[in-house]
Image 1: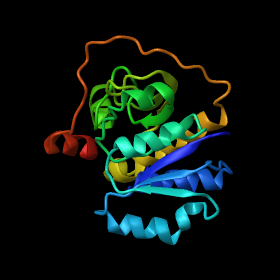
Image 2: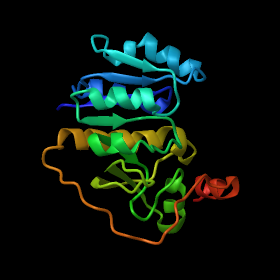
Image 3: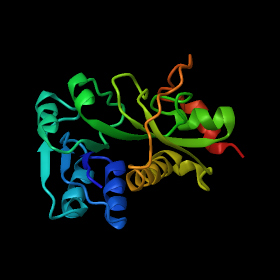
Image 4: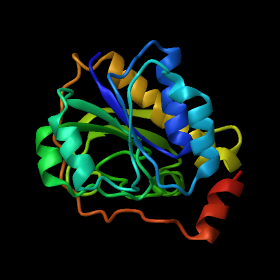
Length: 211
């Protein structure tokens, strides 16, 4: 499988790299977004040698895809990039999104659940959890769909954000990479549902403590 990966100082990036290594999926290159703040995660990544010690690590001191990073990505021969940037980072690099495919695993069933915390709203509205793997476009979570899967609710609801969210994303990612040649990009259906942004603490508590 021919791909590279864009990572950041996040637990999601750690899990992605770990899962790729365990499943013998080796990226051509690792592009590292280092915001200089999450020093604990940064230290862990470097200690583990990014799980791929023989691979080139290209570092950019930024928390979003800036012009310098965009130029670098465009000139690479790699066409597909697994995206694991910082949460809430909406990519607005039109030229990059036209020339390259950025694969993103989103913890919600598109087009019905978009935004930053759809996993909670999905549980509140339908008592279900889905993960969608899409190719990023300029509009929020609106790119072509490659794969959607429903997942069982976690046994420990208190771990739904930090642990389970990253787990279902990584599972979707592995499936897409292992079956990429068989999958077809499907345009999302239009809907009038607004994106679900950061959930209110009371609603979050209702989801976590619901029996």
